[in-house]
Image (cartoon, rainbow, N blue to C red; front, side, top):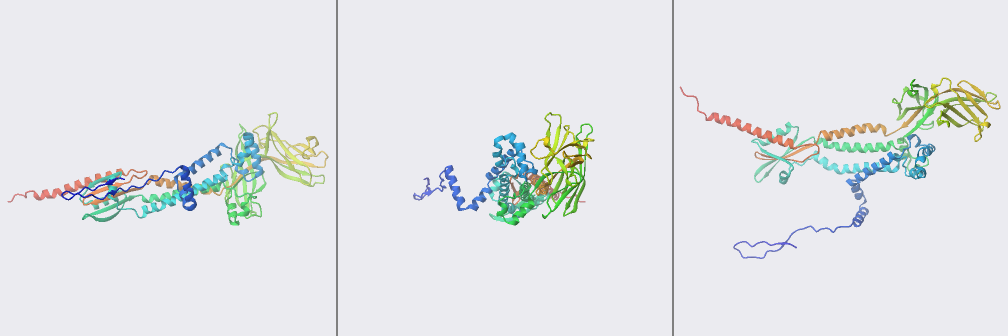
Length: 555
């Protein structure tokens, strides 16, 4: 161990001084990765809350969460995502898998489905990552809050000598009236000035603290709060509620389940012919919301035959009372009521069919939506169809078929012809009870003559997309607040200058803040001070010269 020996004074007897040991901090032994992990686990077991708080406030944790979310989003872009209208319908979802995922991924489809790769943005792990990231932002903000508030409300005015010597941005000047002139110069530039005085070595020292736009530092709380709210709004937008067979409905308290159902979103397509109604919330629930299509029209381009405009006259009812109406529901002009939005989606062929027995009793009267489509084997047309429609009180089912050219719609044909087939499920066409080709307004008899089948009408029906997204109304206001807080941070950066004044000598020092160049203010103040001092010196010299000059000659 090194020692320092004190030298004997001159003229005195040499004496051996005591050895003084140099104070060095002992070097901790280097731990292996396994030992570090074991040490962290032991600390987490002893202090779980402190360990969790430290993990959430770590920059590494934030980077890990952001990278994980990016990877999940890339997977969501790579794998086709199931549309929202099939997420709440297991049968429709399985049909979507069979049609879209199975041909592409084959035997791996069940594995990818178990990993939620086809519903990745509403999966539990994506929601968990967003929730942990929001919690991490909250913890980091709470960690920084005391220092930010201290800087805003109780800033440090007096700095050490070393700060004025080593500051990256510093300048000095002299002025005859240093305190008053400096305070006024800072205030002219919009700075708020605070001061303290002290006596050092029998000389009075004045400390000034000048700050500008310090209020803008509080925008970091607004930004972080907006970011957390945006993440939560995104989670709410992807929330579709607990399934009816979910164990959560039996375990969680009823208020939580009610809140979950209130925040749950949905999306489904509903095809409706003119004059027909459908329900959003069935009667018997607290909502009882239904909607009715009063009229639907579609316009087509005479040159290409493509539809150019869909217009639906729609009425919305709650508990049987009209609560909303739109006579011009279009693709870009939806109707919204109580958080439910009705979008104009597309159009589909429909037919109104009546079946009566020999005594005139109506066995079937309803609108049939031809929501399936296949290309003919010959490739010279397309068939829209609906089949397997049960006829009440019988063992028969009905199928309705409309054959047309590709790209052609039912409304474009002056006298369309539809094929209506009635038979026992599983039998061939030659055993059908009826096989008729009818135009609107025509009727025909079954094979045994006991039934009368009439095609009352055939037209295009509107297809509405009905959605509810509890997070959507929040996203735009939150995004606006988020952008405004960023603008405040970028366009109103904080500026801070510390000054020490001894007599006529002024020392200035500042920190390099983000998005600002404080050096320009320091140099400008120093330049103005020198100019002011020089001007004041000249003005004082003029009266002295005048008093020393000889007076006018006597008479």
